[in-house]
Image (cartoon, rainbow, N blue to C red; front, side, top):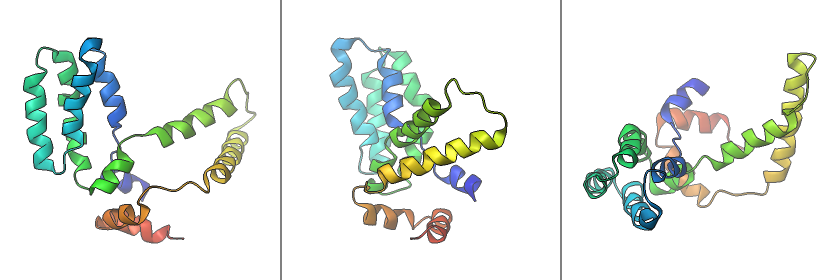
Length: 164
């Protein structure tokens, strides 16, 4: 089931795409450049996104390295439009995933594990600590996000299996 979900939800981080592309742009143009990009990933529809992307490519052609980052990853940006705006807002960044990975790195740094089970136990304990820490956290508009996700058959099946 995890493999199927992974194929359906390819969570390419917009924040990282912006960061990777902006390094090709002079700092004096950062604000205007990012405003142009926001029209692409913040478009209300896929057609709007494509039109904004064409305009973005023309407007910023003087920085081919920056534009190329988006051209190479545009199929991932397009995938976001398979979902409603509430879902896209949640999928906009991978900060939560990065936070978990960072936390795992902290507890496993400079530690020798006698066997694989010792590592798995430590990661399990850290996961339960993180769960307790984040238990009160809420996703904005979760009801809308859940409804939009439930329109996808594969995701809907996962949501039914994990309902609380």
